Length: 486
Image (cartoon, rainbow, N blue to C red):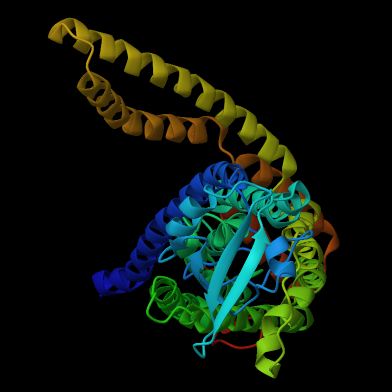
């Protein structure tokens, strides 16, 4: 009997630990992918800017993008969406790479003949389109502005991952923030190099699912999710289906306009996610008993309304048969409000204490620098040993030395992190302050319901359990115990 009862208790715990392990590594992979994107995006954008510019841009399947800038000559000549580029000067264009190579043959100031085709098969012949340099002002609008917004999203998401990777809501917010950062940083790539088009399609498709999942978890999981944690993953099934559909269509040269429909459904799903998130915040703000949670929800709700409503109008316009031209100057700055609102809730209501954050950042920052130096010295030293043994300076020695040091450093890093956690005990500071405050409240609070609620909040802040329940037994009026569950 005891074994059966223990198995019932341990099985959900094992499932939770397995889920936590898998999702933490998945989110970490997305964080690394975001880091690589943020490093590569400026390099791609600045190199593309040096190529002669015909005054219009195309997307992955050579369809002219519905984007206009500062006196773009091609757009002034009438080249517009949904035309598809088929020839540029003397060159037949079959891929975006053909287009990039052909532009080098016509420096700024030269005139070029451009032919396009419409979805109904109509051919358009644009003669004498003047080549130009890509305007620096448009690089600021179309690249640096969304890139900066993506950088902010990534920074906040990465911070949350460092501090709350053990929490489902923390991992979900990180996933949302980092995929939003990837999508924002690669916006310019959609109309320039197209190297990251598939990655952008994946990132944009995840936003709707992540927002719905976040709404189910923030600030605490709703009851169905508490009983069945796998429910929070269901919104991602739609996101993954949209990602696969989008990836297939943006490489389909036989149906070059089909990607538009796939992207449009991703936009619609984001609109649904925004509305669901805001609706859930309104509902939670009205029904939650905890005053702190209500304040957090109110702040995030206000930030979400200010951040998402302008974008929701743009994304949801196709539902009503209207298409609004994308303007980064109008839509993108509002998006910064959402992560900043969560940051305000974090700092003001102590989801994470700022002093603990600074403490941990300093400790881990110093250790990271030391480990980095030791790593580089070890690789170089081992490489020299290989060179002495083999008698030559070979690339194989460098590769082998790096692999060996990486293999040795991984367990070393894990042991060092565990030692730091035990030595500095990152939750101790929060726990002591919370328990002191609760002890003071015991002397003043006489309402049993409020005291019970506060006790559960203390448990959540100090121990961060997956679930908690408080049972009060009243034996004063009858022999049979009466219990109250919170």
